[in-house]
Amino acid sequence: MSLLDVQRSLVGFARGSSAEYHHCGNLTPSEDKWLKQLLDAPGLHITQQVQQWWRISRVCATAPLTVALLKRHGLEELIVEYIITEPIRTLFFAAELDQFKTFLRGKALVDHTTRTLVEFEAGIKTAAQLAAAGNEVSTESFSLLLRFQCYPPALFAALLTGTPLPALEQQDYYLEINPSLESLWRCWDNCYHNCRLNCHTNCSSNCRSDRAPQHLQRDDAIHTDVPRLPSKVAENHI
Amino acid sequence: MLPQQSLRKLGVGINYHGYFHDLILRHIDIIDYIEVSPDIFCEEVICEDGNCSDATDGYNRTFRLNTNKLQDALVIGQLRPVVVHGLSLSIGSASGWNSDYLNILDQYAEQQTFAWHSEHLGFMLVKNQDGSEDHAGLILPMQFTGEALDLLCPRIQQLCIRYRAPFLIENTTYYLPDFLTTDHQQWDEIEFLNQLLTRTSCGLLLDLYNFYCNALNFGFDPYAALSRLQLDKVIEIHVAGGVTHEGFLLDVHSREVPEAVWDLLAWILPKLPNLCAITYELLEQALPVTGEEKIVAQLQRCKTLWDDYLQMTISPAQQNISHLNKVEIQHVAA
Image 1 (spheres, rainbow over the protein chains, first blue to last red):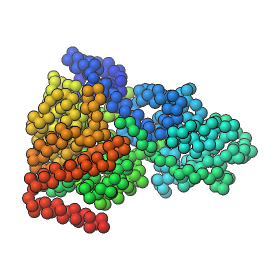
Image 2: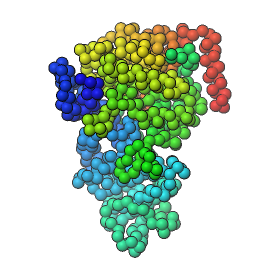
Image 3: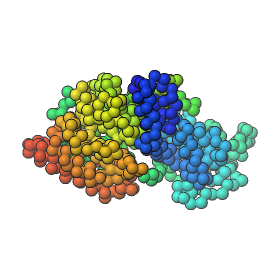
Image 4: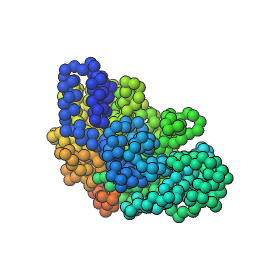
């Protein structure tokens, strides 16, 4: 049994899968016995848990608002499902927000606000990276418009402080993410929505991303005094 | 050869994280150096030229250092020496190590000098049979076999010459059984480390807490085991604390250093002629749990042992040089 086969089996074991072990076709009886012993070992269970703790901690760090909202909705099992079913494909400490976002997109249990929120957190990450890159990349290449059914800063504040969530409203609120903005994002009220209808007549009723229209000036925005969100909200998992 | 004679005795340090930035500045008088993991500055970035290493979600992406986070670390790097401790090289992967990490380290090395760099003895990445890459999510132990040794030695030699700084390998904690001495291992952990230290130019980063975890979890005598180690190759020591879960002491760096590890440290220090540094490691999330007062107390306890070590092992003239180095750094910082 080669080192590569051993490592494939161990990575599979650590992630709760024995498929790689079963693919090893050239095991000697003693090698087979050894791997079977590993599968039953209490230390393997610990290894799996340690792997899951690290991953959960990464998801919580990279999408703190989305995780908080999932918990409010009693949907923690989606985070666990994500950890168990989705392979790890990024660098050890690199954010896996996009993978988490894609996972949530495919889940019927996830409501409009949660989907919009994870889009928001992923958008902020991208905008922050583009802003930090300065002149190396054009910040005009990225702009995101998200529709919320409640005032976004009130939602963020409720999630960060543990206070009750704001009620959903008939009125739509739009949030623009753009690396050229000082705090990377700003809110619009439904006058922007009306403006878009007048101009383009194709406004979607669902959360959607779009390029912000060039004719909209900064003065049209609802200026919020909410500071830039922390990139990471410390959570105690210890 | 590892240039042990030219390595400076740094003293006592702490691992760097953005959350620790202010704490480190407040207690800079008892922190002789910082240990930096370039991985924590790493992020995926959208690029427009189409030359990125990966493409997901419709965007081309590559890895780069987050300049804001890096800048904070560089500030402390002007006040104190830096050593590098990698987390994600995956040096033992049979299907190839993580070259993205080396690219990150290259970028970091352009902006920050460091006394040495180190990496964990283990692996995280594997290439599947379909060519895709999978990630364990934590560092898994190497098999202590000839095949593993043949894989590691040339990689370590490559790392020894890639940067203008020595390279150290670190022993890790493992929870899987039969990584001691079985039919499937040619050596135990100590013998395997000795083989690596003999066949390459690297030094040893001896993580006493990791070693203590393994000893406790698998029931061997750490003193007897450490007595068989090539102790003249130990350049840096790590101490840390953790929690016990389901009967296993875990390597989570979330608590104060256990008394048993302090005892091990006091016992082993006189046996380490080339030791240059003792690092207290702490997980960033543990800061509010452990608290600043206890962290400072851990560092001060390391400092007391370090001062005793200096008295025992180096001449007054060398101690004076060490003191002058610190004065010089403070002068430059001022």
